[in-house]
Image (cartoon, rainbow, N blue to C red; front, side, top):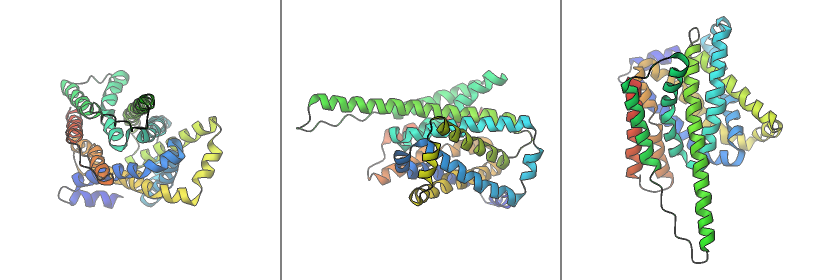
Length: 321
């Protein structure tokens, strides 16, 4: 892993390209997971990806000798990293995956650009880190970009001649309800991820990025498993995930988005400025816009592209602040 970081740093624009690849991996993985989420549910998918990545990252730690760092870390640091995993992976990722069937990949990922806003608010509430004017400007730009996209609601299709006005109204009402629930879930996901970043930052005094990520994944897996167990669904969920069909469906997206994407993200952050990395990592909604258009064989909506770019610019202003 160290050789990967050093290699990326030696390439021209290596860190920047690596961050863009990470964003592409994330948006592609969420798209791949869409049909599986509808079939298995968000918590089942989240449990699988956390457990598989936990194993893979554990093997990575063995290769790079990172276990000694974990055993030497203080309990306070481990507790904070664990809490950040509950917030960001158990809560945040479950909400994100649950939002995808309701909002679509692009709008769900677009709402994630508001994560830094929640992080700034929580940093002020917990640590007294006063937001700057630049932070406020960045937050306003992010929200403007999100508004440009989500306020562009496609008009309802005209009902067929055989459909009654009541059934058409009921269909529109059901669609509005799905969008509203999806929006709440996407905002909850952004909050979980923003809060997870703030809490993780406080606990990383004596832990590196790979070790901290492993602890966060452990917390995410245990948190989702506990939620399923409380509802009496853990056994049935594990049995469904153990089928060869679901393993084949979930493994490629998990490898692409959670493991490879995470490694690329860490390599990119190590090889470029944090503010530049933050902006490039936030481009996943742009990639998802192109992916959705390609899969659905339609033109890219100009308003969607403009709003997404505005939101990414807002993330850049926040990062610069």
